[in-house]
Every structure is written in C-alpha cells, then in structure tokens.
Amino acid sequence: MSKLTVDQKNVKGLFQESKTSFLTPDYQRPYAWGEVECKTLWEDLFTFSFPNDDCDQFNE
Image 1 (cartoon, rainbow, N blue to C red):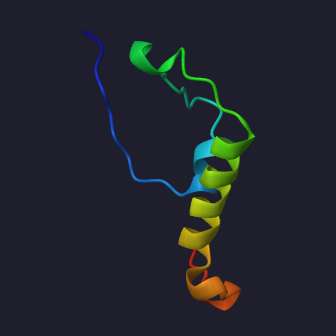
Image 2 (cartoon, helix red, strand yellow):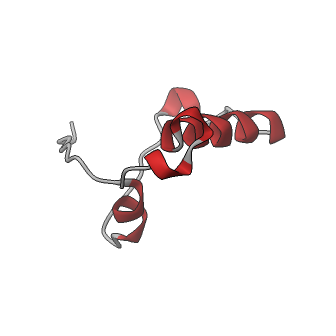
C-alpha cells in the first residue's frame, strides 16, 4: 500500500512544483470530462476565488 502525504498548498504552488504527482483512483478513470463538467469546475473555482464576483476580495 502506498503512503499518502497531505500538505496545504495554494493552487499556483501546486502546479508549479515539478515533483507533484496526481493519482486518479481506478473507479474514476473511466469518467470522461466534457464541456459541461469543465464549465462547472471553472465556475466553482471562480466563485471560490472571487466571492460575490468581487476580485478585490481575492486572497492568495
């Protein structure tokens, strides 16, 4: 069994770190993302990042 290590990071740091690896569980591998799912994810990220559609409230 593999060891799971959890660290708190911001999104920018997560994607910039070259040693980061992503694991997709077997039960999710057949799932295919279409335009609708991508749009939902983007809207969720935007809503989280810009509360009340106010970019001045953004916190890195």
